[in-house]
View (tube, rainbow, N blue to C red):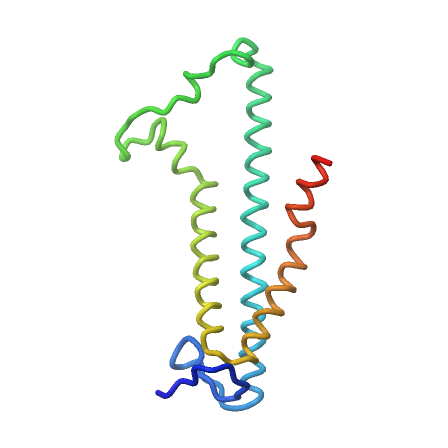
Length: 162
């Protein structure tokens, strides 16, 4: 197949798979909409991963505060017995492996894998060099960022210090 390696505005394109072909203006419009929605999904997953991390951190801090209230001698002292990493085989679910295979870490890993898959798929769509698809991805990323990010993290850190 002869692929155009320059930026172009065409209606006929093969996108990602041999069965995802556009041959008309309506086919290109549907492909642009799909690319746009994939970008919004990418930003939603990224935002959801951040939400899970904040929620997990708050839950961990709450558990630590409750533990220090119920057991005050460990609140200011050394908590080596609670936080030490036990060297154990991975097949044995105790100590280190119990903290390694939590539902939070498994969910974060699965979501990160899905986010990486979407990022690579979007990159390959851009590599068709079709400006219609590139513009739909750029606009989709901007809309997804607008919908799911809110205040950027940098602004939050700047307001904390100044």
